[in-house]
Length: 563
Image 1 (cartoon, rainbow, N blue to C red):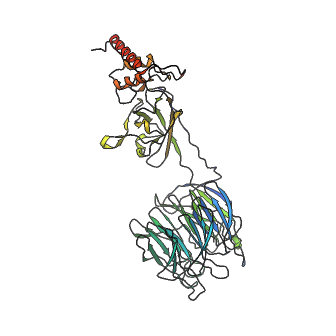
Image 2: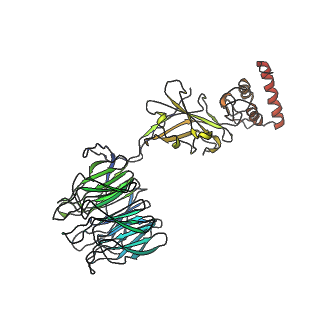
Image 3: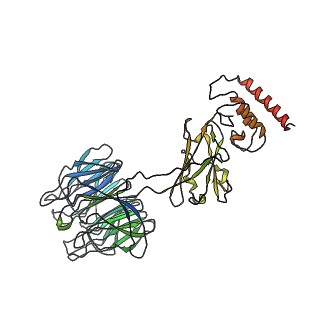
């Protein structure tokens, strides 16, 4: 048996700190996240955040007195680098969302309500401006389908609370308006499926909270309403999997906060509730992969608690920010969840950015054997045949737990069997009493060139664990059974010795159809005399054919294979 090569996978992420999430409530949930920190260019709170393309943007805010910020800190998720830009107008308490290539920062407060909308184009890096139909701050924003929606807010024009919804249609570039069923500010918004959902809010200073949920269906353009289990404002919202979650918030009464999480299941249309590990309002939320993360907030003082919901398991767990704070902003880009700025102890303003990153998945090494039974692994990319590849089972990898549809050999999927569509065959190939997997790949589909010295096989287990393995190959001409880069009498001898029998390339089965026959002999004839080591002369085709056929006849008579 030839040597088998194991490929080890290493994470490309520099781990500054590994955070193991602990037990929360009645369910055990262990999650490993990488927690790192960065800094904004300016300490501030009440800023707004959204992401577009590879960029996470943190814009505006307040850093004391009447000192509002026009700073935009931009994190490039593809490089990990930060840069800055400026809003057209310094302000706090904006709403932010993204649709298509555009990130929007709308409304806000700068000693009066603003109707300004700053728009960043993630594909060009350019900024432009628009206006809301009504100036207001403390509004909420989310996007669904082609639509970016900016709803509610507080206004000093007429009624102190707004029911206006400004809607930008990314497919046309046009703006329109709609109305909420109830005017309110400091509400929360998220989207799931075809629905944009606006929940809760304040309707009358510290004396009134809302339990109203306004729902916009982007597929129909229609609105409907629902109710939260508890009226509150300054709650946080995020969506993950089939779930839209509305968590925490402030209740009526000074210093009273909620730990309630209202959960809408878009698959069933049903609502349910659970609880955060700590009651608080003014928290923020974002999502990475299967995780909805709710961080920080105010509980009579700033909080450093992070509650994490895993949609794949339905379990909750907790972590901590590097610094207690409220009035922060959150967004995600790639596998990075970022929580930036805010105010901390004694109302000091923060420039801290906590970044939670999902590490690269653990990768298991596969024992891959190309052309089982062959020591050299000859390959000819012009062959019309198939390439047999074995994955050997081991204590680390149960081949029956591999997601067969995920397997790729140099970008090519395994061949399916006839009408059944089955992939591969499970058997003990190497006699170690452990089940192995035998696959076949169409040679001409392999995405490689003639210089390749190894083929890499990738895939995942049914639980998502990544797999990778490789084996060496040698590029050879058709008819070169012993892979010495020549087509000569040694190859003809191999073919003659196995005529009419099953066998691999090294026995003369050059089209991998399972039998050594006239098709394989034709391959030898077509390349007879080829010498890849010396580039010598090659006989004329007719001469080659006669020579090979004559030699085969002599060998067969000598060995008694003739009729």
